[in-house]
Length: 113
Image (cartoon, rainbow, N blue to C red; front, side, top):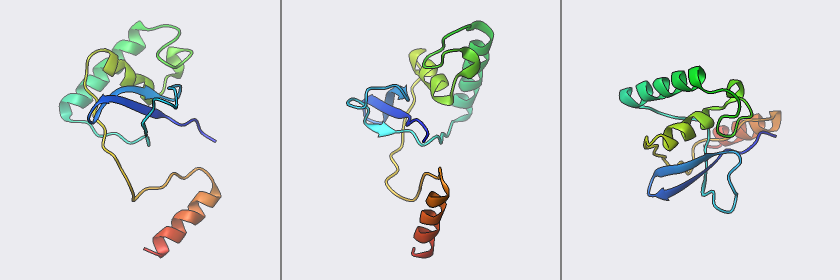
């Protein structure tokens, strides 16, 4: 089963910490792996990515090595650099698919909606 990526925030809709190693007691939301960026935000993401790949060696955020970092590590790096990352709560309309049983469950929900 995949590691859950958690989010905690200190101000309404602003993410302060994101990653799979956050304390579950303080994590308030779960990141589903979907992100939307403005044009400027996408440029900042790319700049941050390029800077990290070029200048970091070894441990990076939660990754043991820069070559193994995850998307959430890059987002946390942006937050640490002062960029603002907002979240949107999703209450329904999506399911996580990890196993064949999850596909069966999704088909059941779709056929009964």
